[in-house]
Image 1 (cartoon, rainbow, N blue to C red):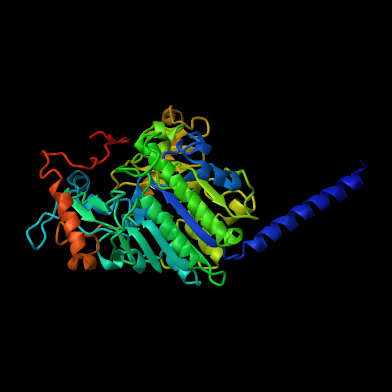
Image 2: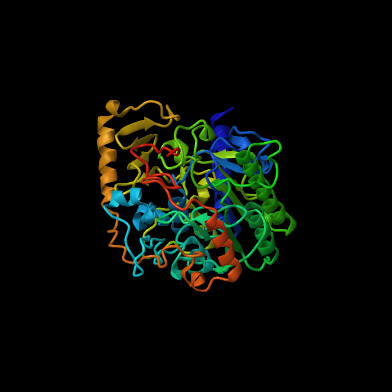
Length: 512
């Protein structure tokens, strides 16, 4: 082949490549897709079939993985509420103290880390301080609502369960269904108040009113999605956030599959069936072609076995706590069965969704979020080189990833050479440890003051979450809660609680 021909072919190749990149960029500016964000709760990395689990339990999720694109380096935070706040705001949760969950402000072992004790309200009751996602934050729901999207949350909120201003419909959602707090009984919709009194509270609502229903929450969430989706039209794009409480504990009576599987596996299979119903509903209503579906998890599972091949569990910053499965499907924009290996954090959903929807990223409070649309849909490199998991002031150890390395307290791991985090290499890289430690200290100094948290929950033990809803609860609700409380332990030994104690160092013992 002569030199002239080589030059011509090279020119044509470069030109074609530029045209394809330009064409893809044009499709992304903005394309205003419908967006469905499915979030499971406490599912381990290794539980779905497509990441090494039992394929009998997750055929629908595995089918979605085959239809869509898998993100191999998708990261969250290590517990529920921080991940949800990061997703909603596009900002690291330490910036709003959302690395502390609302219920943590009623737990003595957590309050001890802040030098606080349980306060007493005006009724003389020991109670929790009110803590929730800052109402001044701009949420992704608000960003999409600003450009005409219908917005809905169907499932678990966990960003504030008491004051009206902290509930979903004051944070950008046109429609709400599900529960506000950390985790409920799948069949009775009751939750252990989880600080300071361990008695039941009702927590099941539609549009911020308590509702009386019969069923299993996983199934009910899927049914509500089907109902809401059937009301949508092609004229108005929609954003539906579907944060399941599955497979979070308590795993109570599971309605099916327990003849063949353990209760936890049966709960996972029920969750998979709900995902299948959501996908079928999108297809049946004719929305598949212009709907971006994301299916991921909020943090790692409770056991290392569930998080294989990673080390660690939920509530730790080992990979097992923060490295989660993630699938994206958008026909015509994602290649079936493909992978993206670029680093992405849950905060990045904000900038990515807002950009695709044509909303602005300009806002008073700066984002930690990167627009990942070109990495995801145009094969560009990820713009993210750093992830901040925790900084000082958290109950978990300050943890930072930069490039291939993760500094976790005083431990340093090379995640490329040692993804299972078996070997501390801090001694071999003292300058890197020093630089990353300084970076964590810099970030920690950006945490705003906590303040004295003067607002207290009154009454200390309500019948239902939502201050306005608790003022006049319906009689059926009062009777259901009273009946359930009468069957609970009426007192607990000193130092014992129905919830786990705070983490100590780099680990947590869920047996306590």
